[in-house]
Image 1 (tube, rainbow, N blue to C red):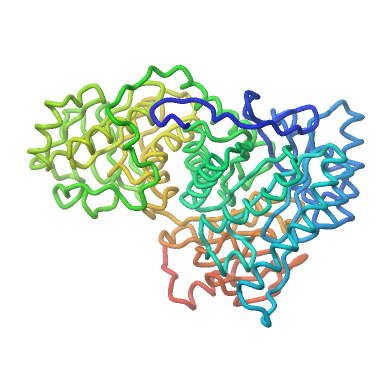
Image 2: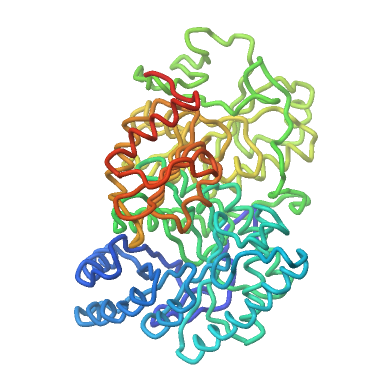
Length: 581
């Protein structure tokens, strides 16, 4: 049973992956994925060395064909000769024969249930007949694969992607978290039928709401079935820079906070070795709350972590609570006059303790800073009679998620519906650390539908950077768009162009279009699916060729790469979504 008001790792079975087991009481493992061609043996070995030296436990390579899968033998041999024994993982899409070949050479093979054995729908069959036919194909083909994995002592990851569910799962369940769970359970049932336990599961999406909902739903399904396979966590196409770090910390951190997750990958559109220290920082931060003092609450089971809508509060001052978008409250109580012109905070706390909206003093609004210990029964009863009070609830302990959850539960039980600003102070010397910590902490509550604003204090960081962080967290939780969102993949051996350079060029051309989501995908494997909610998409279609999408529809095919960014701009203009700087 997960402890929502404490921290304890979820106990799982053990997946044997080479000499680095996963799950149970083993440490949370860190991994990354090579971005060079799997056919370039020397480059693959060199990049794997850098990833392992950065602290990764596993290294993954794409194996889109039998040829690439076979070359994993050379990569494995080259790494072993250099004294590197970290397990390697093959990433398979569409090609079961490549998966069969990969089993011969590496310690783990990841398959995608959405395209491992699925074929085009047969229009002569009813929906039920087509579903049953597809299920039989899974049992037969994946069953044979599991048998071979068991014979060779290999592990399998059942890696479900929101953007690549099979056609029959989409027809029955739609593009939903439920469809992801059903897809996973179908393949997991095959493993269980063969008593194959060296299994790892992932449920990934670029949307943090979908990703976390799918993982939590799967955990509940496994708990009900009396099974507990280890979980791989990751947010796909998170992007680069601060946006990629914030989005990853929101999705991964909110699950780690409840003890869910046995291995993680922070997917960034950067060189893969840069992903590893970010992942290690995130894991260390969450693990640090292991000895959090117990929070004793009446009826803790009443806390609904899976609410489907925002918490209902009163609206205060036509600004906070009610139907209003969550706000950013900037703590300038210790000075600081620098502001990002494009990301102006909604409210400013000045050094004299007053609150301003721009240059206007909010004299008619009542802000009440407090902590969990202040929410006594008497205080809660008083707040019920003054619902126009804005609570600024500061979490001060090592487990802020538990403190805020406890505060919200006490308020809900007392019938107090004042709007709440989440507040916490961070003392990290590096901005990246503050980004990861605040995103993991506050993102968890925002994903659960609670919180009407953020107030992040970090005296060692520029105030404008902290304002930007708060806006970034709200965007990562899909609550407020304040800048262009780039859904960009981290790249792998399938990537058909220089991803980092292209992301930079597209950002330079479109970063002022604050209301748009733009997908930037290296190839078509996950691209169109994972960027399904993007307004526009830029997808590698072949060497030197790009396809452009308007939402889910490919509208321009095979564009020469050197012309593609300008054609993307032209496409945005044609559809009336362009704004001059």
